[in-house]
Image (cartoon, rainbow, N blue to C red; front, side, top):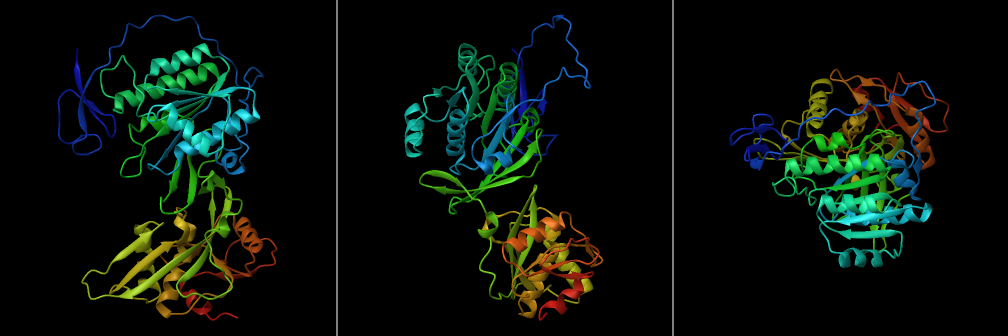
Length: 447
């Protein structure tokens, strides 16, 4: 019996214990485990090779969940035989979402679903189903943490084509002596479940715990094994939840679905832009409406900035929903190009509604909200703004400009502050074109 030491963060293994992993530089993550024995390699039968251009390869079929927000996130529905990993904070609603997906899938199809719960008893799952008013005989419940029991149940019930594992950190393989949740167990169980799903054409949904850094616990290879990776975002104090696609082999990535947590479970939101905006019929200092793109969907969101004086030697910079390093860059550009000195001011930036912006086209909206807060003047009423700001202060073009303008026009906005060199189709919305960030000062009293 051979002992190895495996990092629980990245999966790197060594022959001796070390306090700091040499692969990921994390401290106190190396744990002793028993090495998995591998059998002798045997010569298998010849593998059938198919041509790419021929008609021998069949495109995998999809089935809908009946919820438009979910089907959008999955890229048009769940692919039969695909493996999907869903991560999120405790209590955010992962189990509630998966139970609702399972109920909708079996209602719209002829096959059965196996819901494997390794954390809750069958009674607890049944109580949740009763609260959600789900009573589907096609959903089979199994409370176990053994990978062998899951595999045996799948092989005995060929009608099961939808498998939910809640969660992968609780499942263990009896051939491995390490505890459930370790890197070896998570990696091995996920691999076996994925192979089982591909072999029997089963759509696999796996729940993954997340670490304090917001990453899915276990080795990074766990995300490489599956076809789709989803993150469930939101705050327990807020009723809104966002399901974001991080990886998708069968559709576009970075798509989002917006839901509202209610007593009846998760309710999809048809018009997310209306949730993240206040009434745009009045002027507000330090506020700018950014027309963003999440995947293929345009969403309008509010950027709020506050500039306050301070007696501290190092003024505070606080950001919610945006990259703090990018905020520092925008402040430096305003300092160097617009002579707007904020070195002795505290800067607070917030993306309303709990959204997280990742695209650089939000630079101009952030700059506008900062300038608005400094000069104590609002942006023009009922206007949106978007554009990427270069270090020189120039405003660069944004992608999908027409989609952004169309969404703004649909919600009643009358003006759009956009990059000057962009190509825009004819819209009823008035476009104010800017080429440099210093021109923002000139539009605050624009008529």
